View 1 (cartoon, rainbow, N blue to C red):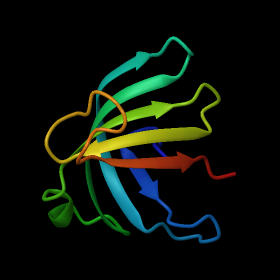
View 2: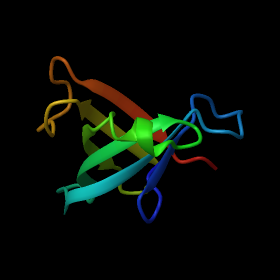
View 3: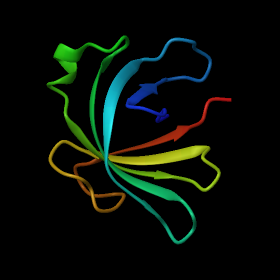
Length: 101
């Protein structure tokens, strides 16, 4: 999930302690949806855990992120070209993340 500051971590499974990927992000735009969900345009750089800045520089990705009202689920649409405007666009990647309890 997205953490305060500029760091995010990606766990492939819920039963592991060490993340698979580690990254840095910048919130470029934020807004609230009509259902009280939070939306973001993010730019990110990532690498396998632990974060490596040299690798991260080469992995710039654009995200459209939606965090549900309770903050427990985050849907992300990712593109290597520009910020996606909606979910499900051809050629993008779609991910669903859940807050680790």
